[in-house]
Length: 130
Image 1 (cartoon, rainbow, N blue to C red):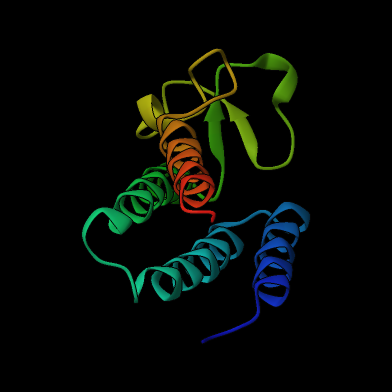
Image 2: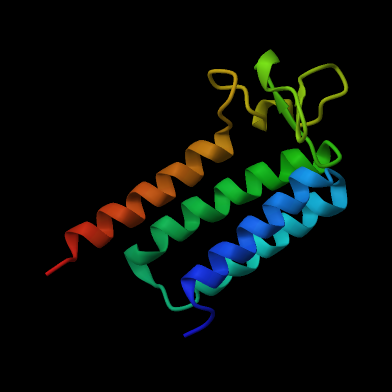
């Protein structure tokens, strides 16, 4: 059945921590690779309507990975107070800035898609409880 959930979560968190501690395009790519591999493993046994959360999660990961990789491992943001580590202010050199954390200054299109995928997954789990 694949890797146990706690180990998967720990691996993803470790990759994210590495990206925060050593922000670069390589640590960013490593994080998205680890997350993407677990997402693929999560999706393998799904079909039909069960794919909806996976599609939303994939789209969210794709959007966030695209913008951060296009910006050398950094996420452009509209929030001035959040400029540290992997977040940078939006400027003329920002690539794919419309995919960055621009909604309310701290939320990206990818974040909305990821959150939607998680909500659909949780609602589905709650509705199928016996």
